[in-house]
Length: 598
Image (cartoon, rainbow, N blue to C red; front, side, top):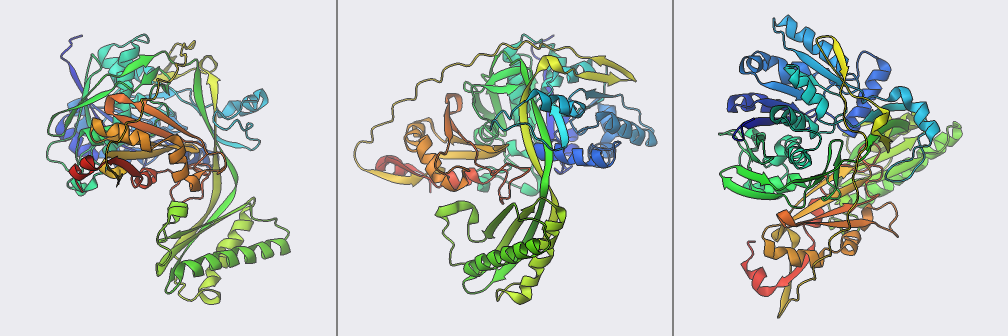
């Protein structure tokens, strides 16, 4: 193994419906691997619904046609390997479909698939064992389960590549393992190389969300050129764990310390203890250095032993939901919309009682255009047009279908200015339950050329928590002070994990951080987002230090009304929460404020 070897990995998709535009640009730029992230809690539940209807399905059937087959000949000619979790709940079926489609083009890639994560057949065993939710402590669901998947790491992917696979299809591996697996294979990293496994996980974490690392959803969006042709990320990875984030030449987008830092804290809880199957990653010492145009060197990741347990994600259906969307235009639009929603729910409840169908389980109203997501800090109460978004939940489909039909009548029976509805939907409510299972209780396997073999990994763990470092003393502001919005001092990125979300706040300059820290106490952040918490009397906010990038990370618990699969909110994945926090007023010395760009 030579120390100057560089492995180039392209992050080709961030989610199942991402644009295929990344594939040709990354192939032209020259990469060794293309990684395609297709799974999230919501999508794995959808795959479970597919599999329930047709056991031969349960995977991303469109993956081959849209993302691989148009360029498969070029991939094989150039020796570019494909790693994807598009297998969902049926990696074997996905691999078979891919092989048949490739054969029709007279192409014969060697395809491997990883199994062992799908534990639906053990649902009753887990229920009887009394496993409880790892976040809320709730009891195991008493309903039929849609999916039950343990998170698998990177070593089974590395084993498939060692057997000569051109394409590796997995189910529920942790997202960053799609990158870590190739690095384990290329550099011969072992189970004990904790710092290297941590560095490979950081690389995977930065690549897994596609263009989010290259200027997509960046705080300073005006600085990001050419969204239409945005470049997707490339990680140039070395055997010592260091890597450079870049993108294809001639593409839009931006790779900077800010874009990379934002993505590094995306969907992270404790940055000193980021749990993945192969290692516990410490992000706190990671440093970012701009070494050229669109080139950021990433170093400093540290690894600690993994845990002896793996996260298991469970989805299950719990009733039905109707969503209705109506434009309300004219004088006093918000007031008219609120009255209309209340009347429609009242009418629906009366009809449900008359039919002995039981009451609505939950109703939810948001006035889009009136800053509904801002809670008590909303400013647009006088707008003359809103989009009335109504949600009604019921145990039975008939209950929500009644509401979905009845709400249409409002165009002639209720508020003046009600226009034709913008659409709606009726669908099952998908809930999420997560628990920890000993790694010794399931086994990952790898299949290639019809031969299946178990892939052994350590199961004993060894992680021990460490006490949090002391919080630095806040600075004393001598002389006159003024308040400036946080956005002038920091970048911000937010993301969801179940029923909690995080906000990473990265100081634009190190000397800004003490003032940010002094202002953004956990209590202050809790008060700013008071409208988000399930229990407004006991909001829980954790704050973590990330000194390597001069940042703070905030985790807000029980603040997404059930999270991506169940929340009725407009922003159920917390994409806009950082935007809200960036308006927070931060006191700074007047001299500092006068030097800030507007």
